[in-house]
Length: 295
Image (cartoon, rainbow, N blue to C red; front, side, top):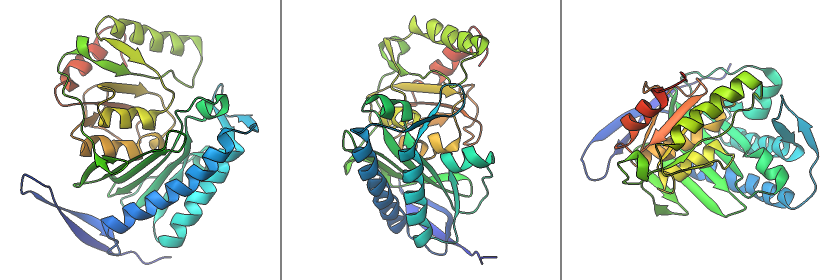
């Protein structure tokens, strides 16, 4: 059994003088962890970019969810790279978990990877595709990297250090009213009629309350678009697992946004329920989601 030690990293939040103290594994610095995650994402991004313009070998996973040989290759690549750097860390990946059917998130440093978020987009040549890498420490999302190699957009965030797009700081929007806000949502992998009806009824009820709705087919990118202010609000219930949100959750919060359960309760990375917005819109979104059929 690998020995495991906990030390602590101190992070000063610029502008307010606050210092947060939270556990890190084996004195790994935040800068090093972020750099490693970026390197892994860019390596996977090269594979995604190469595969994007070629014919795909596609398998059906569930009713409509897809998996390609590129998904598997990217997950193997990312995990191999991270394991070389941090053999004592834990790892959770979409394709690994899909095969084993188990998600166990502990307090130990854990890399959570979605090798291709937006696989259906990838198969159809729709360019909203990304690799998402998140690191949790004490079950708290601490480092997040989301990279869209087709559009060459690299979103990064580190707990206490802000969020960035291609190295430039990003912030959530300043919209304060639903009717002037752009909402992102997604359909659900479960295409049973009752489940789809409930999801579409919810979306229909929200269309009267917001300026417009967008569905781009990637939960990780939806979160990043909230973080950089392109989208004002986002919610999704019934997504695949923590790999969809581990990276984006850090980036949203570090961009000044909020990540929460659509009911308004605290965000649980393992619950397959997520909502995100700027602070002004949270309560209004929760209220709007609560009307009509329950989530």
